[in-house]
Image 1: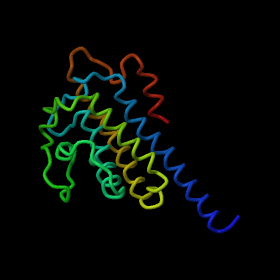
Image 2 (image 1 turned 60 degrees about the vertical axis):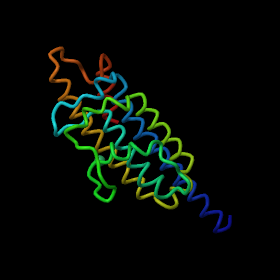
Image 3 (image 1 turned 30 degrees about the horizontal axis):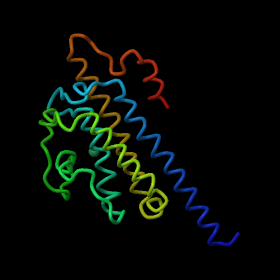
Length: 184
Ligand SMILES: [Fe+2]
């Protein structure tokens, strides 16, 4: 095998490992919200917390903005208006929606956010062989960022549900399955 071929095989391996990890981390975020209604995912219990829907969108915004927009020529944003909604504190990215008001975002719906995630994931995975070569570290950073938000999502969700006298569980009647998944 020539050095060039060996190098190409190595690049493919990096891309495939990164793609597998990307799928796993992204799927876990969705599974945390699997049993939630649009209302569950929209409400915000206090100014310091964020709605589940916002966490799901913001982590997607990270990949769309810093990977696809900046490193994939010709990529078109899913919805240009959402840049303002889902930026958190990235000053260089301009104005953003105030955190205490995130719970007022009844639109886009949870369903639309899931579609947004699906669209960005599709673009990421199709382009992964190119992206793994040019910005593997950035993708790893995005995955660590998403894992941090998974913890925040659960913390915020548990506080929100604790405010409900009916005492709903974050994972419905599949609480045990949820615990198991989180341990992985
Ligand atoms: Fe963030």
